[in-house]
Amino acid sequence: MNRRSFMKAAAIAASAPAIVPSSVFARPAPSDTIQVGCIGVGRQGQADMQELIYRGLESRARVVAVCDVDSHRREDAQWLAERIYTVETGQDASKSVRAYRDFREILLRKDIDAVLIVSPDFWHAAHAGAAAEAGKDIYVEKPLTYSIAEGRKLVAAVKRHKRILQVGSQQRSSVYFLMACEIVRNGRLGKLRTIRVWLPEDQGRGDPRPEPVPPNLDYDTWMGPTAEAPFTEDRVHPQTSYERPGWLQIEPYCLGMITGWGSHMVDIAQWGNGTDLGGPVSIEAKGEFPDRGLFNVHTKFKAEAVYGNGARLVMETGDPAGVRFEGDNGWVFVERGAIKASDPELLKWKPGQGAIKLVQSGNHMKNFLEAVRSRQAPAAPVEVGHRSNSICVMTHIAMKLGRKLAWDPDAEKFVHDEEANRRLDYAHRRPWVV
Image (cartoon, rainbow, N blue to C red):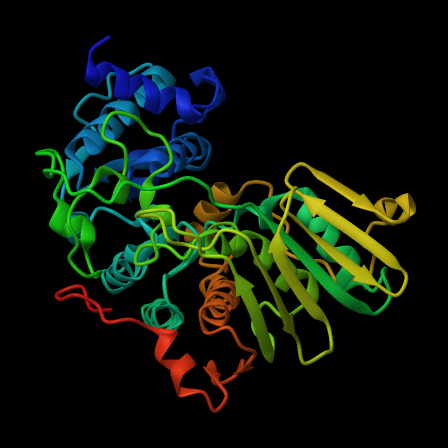
């Protein structure tokens, strides 16, 4: 098996759904099809692209363009998308998906209605903001943005241009997370006292030794708004596989598990607490930052935030990753694929007439496509994604400063703390100023 075949096989094996007979899908007229471009088609990007393709076959949407600064990855994604369409439709789909190096070429296409953005965290704001300005609807992977200031600007852009934006916080489309939050919101636990969140721990060591930039990678564009830095494979992503990329553990590009997984679990904490359009009033945190070569995000951490309603949010490293709501009358714990409660009878409760019923979405990507058509808010809209991610970024700031911080959720500023407020954004390298 040669290298190109290996990369294509790896992309398929990583996350491909089972092949579904094409006879189960309706065949809508092309004029009634939502056309989508994919920006960032690496490890997670190809997985999301495949989900979009299959849900699109059910919901009259089609991937027509892919974009990546790594030519190998964009060629793999182009090949993979065309292969799936050929198998599923029974029609030759070769040359039906165009590949681009520059995301702006996708945004210039008037026939593209929406974009799927699965670029590195530090690119989310620039990609999504430009997409909103270009009149495209947006599905963007979590965390919504790298910084809190970027998040507020993106919220404004989405609202100003009347765009649909779905954050990839797909746990909102899981029946277990929905059940847990409805139990809490309807007072089945009594007064909510504490919300506990457990997240995985980053591990490993990155090699900082500079290497030649591979010819397939536009490395200057990959760095985007971040400061210039010498290329090393561990800084970007593996060149011969689709394994976990190193940038996920390097602070200028990602803040570590606190935003990587935290944006998922804190989002559920916010949902259950009914504060997903607000946030806590104080936060304190401690994190461990051992010497791991190029990798410098936190490993273990523990943090505590307090809401205006008196509820405490306790976040820490632990296994399994999940959320536990604790009230005067018991608790409920939810993780991916499972839910438990102090009293099994709690899990038999169903919201009846007059109960608080939260957004129910059986599939996060399909929910996005439905929102594009209906122009109604999706399950995880931009403001909600911004507020959940803000708590994660605030936690990181508190880790770095090593002291308790007061937060004004209305002004989205730290109270009387200029040093902390300077960390709400960072200096973006031109021309990628958000």
